[in-house]
Amino acid sequence: MKLNLKLQPLSTWVKTKNEPLLIAGPCSAETEDQLMATAHLLAKTGKVSVLRAGIWKPRTRPGEFEGIGSIGLTWLKRAKEETGLPTAVEVANAKHVEEALAAGVDILWVGARSTVNPFTVQEIADALKGVDIPVMVKNPVNPDLQLWIGALERFNNAGITKLAAIHRGFSSFEKTAFRNEPMWELAIQLKTLCPELPIINDPSHICGNRELIQYVAQKALDLDMQGLMIESHLDPSVAWTDAKQQLTPAALSELMELLTLRKPESKDKEFTDKLADLRTSIDKIDDQIIQKIAERMQVVQKIGEFKRDNGVTILQVNRWDQIMNKRSAFAKALKLDLNFTGKLLELIHSESIRKQTEIMNDKVNVE
Image (cartoon, rainbow, N blue to C red; front, side, top):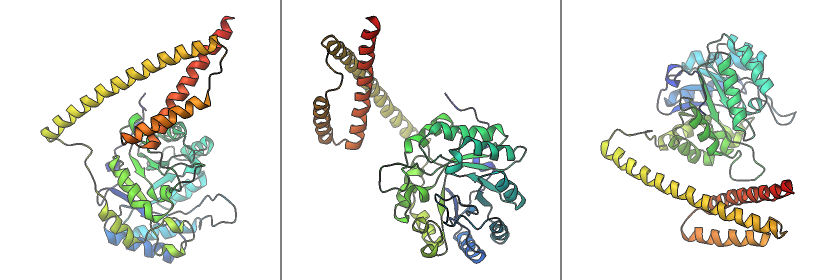
């Protein structure tokens, strides 16, 4: 089911100096000199369309630097006047909204810790009723698509039509190379539900380190995301927050040169005809896959009935180990990604368990 959001195109509320849209600036506004110097260097690159800076910083634990506060808004206003760059800040309550609007901030964004709380989102949305300002909503900390959608809907219901989503990754118990797992599939699902909604990627918070930013940024562009939000600091080595994930303005400019911007589609007839043929092949294969899964589930049903009638438990761990080992080896030989194969097998196995459990329960109900 498609989302029914009333939206204005991104091009109507932000002027992109270069493709893709780049929103950049320090994680935190620390001092006036730091913010001004960084802003001027970013403007000089000619690649930055919006200057961002953290004014209020919600931190995981008390005692850490929680932002310079309202005084930073006056610095941001000066930076805008001197560089001509529109500005963006994060807001987490109605008071933040009031102060940011009074300071002439051009774009507001809602952070991941706020998106996760509908009460907070509604408070901010209520404070923006009747205000014509762009709002960007970061995904919630946890991988919950409905929370993300709900936040977007709350702002849209408040009359905000200049709306975008920011994909900054999700917290995970598993330790990987990323600070926050990208879980690209959730951003793709959101885009599928609302193709008109601009999605901005935040590789800084996904990566947690500057070394991976190019890789994540390129993948975001390849997935047709409309822009990037990247943290940039005059001297990241002395940054008060998130030092490892910030780039100098010069390094950011170099990174943008390395990115490849691809078109979402091509009007070349030879290309479109060939693509149509390949997609037809995909459709036929997908139909075969669905058919084979259905056949497998018919066998699963027979197995479930046989186990039920003979008083045998649903799960046999040894059998599951055999399946995983044999299928994984086969998949490897076919050059399939083992992580993908494992997830696919686990999903099919989970459905098999559910189906057999249903059969067992049906027998109990009959008796």
